[in-house]
Every structure is written in structure tokens, then in C-alpha cells.
Image (cartoon, rainbow, N blue to C red; front, top):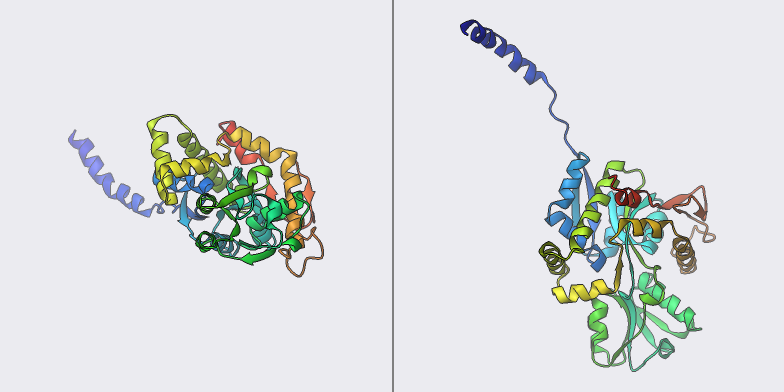
Length: 352
């Protein structure tokens, strides 16, 4: 025993010296993700609060820093400027801001599409035709503008028949509420309050163009697979939690409602007009379907016609959009927006 003890004592300095010579554990790479308030994006706040996001980041050996940016467009501008590795945004904004700005992005998750969350409301009128000759308040060149354009076209009208008044999303609700002749295009939760104002009628909403206003998680194409997989895994675990029938689901919904600044009842009402893809397999199927390509044709035509591609663009083929089947709309040599079913399918197959 004494001999063994002496041997251990003699070896101790060597062991300590060897340990001190070992390199420090590699520090985890941190990736920045931006999100902003919207019914279909509130799950991200819960993913962070609940620890789901951290667990998935740990699984892939990375760190993820989630940041709430209260100004939606600013969040996309910051992503485009290189401040974030991933950001939530609509399909139209993904095309007209980062893609047109030269940032190559991949749609890792199609979380939902607006199915009544965006709409047109007016006072002293009952139909889209009653907009004729009136000023219409909206966030110009946003998805609200796109929705209005589609509504007018479907009712044999054009933007020449109205006057667009550019109004920020921070002001539009209050301005509409105090205008006895108000007409506006906006999204929830502003839309919910506007349509409930005395004398208001909802004359058109996004359920009439299903699938066209998509809410996405967009990631830099050059970002590592670990980030894309971790975010996708965290997203679908969160959606499984909130779509359950137990107390945990009720708690998750209540938490999201609180993040959104409303009541649980209000948040549940907004979820009813949001076509959430709770099932990853369904989301993957939608991503691979032909409707996405048809929608992006509408979107790129609207965007080019309204100058959203900038002065350098000679036509709507200025930037390429790649789809899950490998086909491309626009310039195949300048693909900057990529739709894929890869990550959603991995989630569906339990391979994340």
C-alpha cells in the first residue's frame, strides 16, 4: 500500500503538469437570430424562455442568441447588413430586402401562412369596390400593399382607383380609429382592433389568397448546418408543445399571449386566422408544392412593378429564386433566395 501511495505521489506532479498543458475547451460559436412580434413568430420567445432553444443549440455544439427587434423592417435590414445569421420575415420581404440586397438566404422553415391575419377594413362601405376614390392607409410596399393590389385586381380595379397614404404600423391603428371615413390595410393584432371599431367592415383578408403571405425563418445560406438544424428542431418542439391538449400547452399559449402584449383569448383568436404548420411533414410538403412557385411569381411581379428591385433591375428576372425541386425563377446565375424542404423533412422524419 505504501509503495503504491508513493508511486501515486511521485506521478502526481507529472499528471498535474500534463493537465495544465492541455488546450482549453473550444468556446462555442454564437449565432444571432432576430425576431419581431407577430402571432406566428411568438413561439420563438417561448422557445427561448422554456429552454427548448438552448437544448437544441447544445445538441449541435453551438450557442444561439435570440433578439427581439420591435421594428419589423429594421430587423430585416439588420439581417441584410450582416448583424444576424437568421431572421423571421415574410416571403415578399425575403425577396425584396436581403435577396435584392445580394444576401443569399435559405428558407429553413415555413412556419405558417396568413389566413385572415392581414386584411382591408373600411368605414362607410361594405365591399372592395367601395374603396374607389378613397385614400387608403397602409405601410407602403409591405405585404399590406401586396394584399391590397391582389384585392383590387380580383375586383377589376387597380391602384389608380384609390389613393395610397403611407402610414407606419405604429400609427395606423390609432389613425384609423379616429377617422370617421377611415380605410386601412393592416395585420393582427392591429387588424383585430380596427375591424371591431364602430362602423367598420372587413372587406377582404388573406384567407382569400391562401398561401400567398408566408411567414418564414430565413437563414444565411452560408451558415452552418448545425444552426439550421438546431433552429428547425427547436421550432417544431415548441409547436408540438403549444399544440397539445395538456396544461403545458395552455401554459405555453398563455406565455406567448403575454409576449404579444394581449390576452390569451386574443392570442387564440389570432391563431385561428394563422395557418400554422404544426406538422413538419405538412410544412415540407407545402414547401415542395407548386403553389409556392406560383405565389412567388405573383410576388416578384408586384415587387418589380413597384420598384422594389431598385434602379439596376431591368426586369423581374433580376434576382433568382430557387425552389425545392431545383427549378429557378429569374436569373439562375444570381440565385439569392432558396426554398427547400430539407430541414422540415428532417424534422418530420425524426432525423434532427
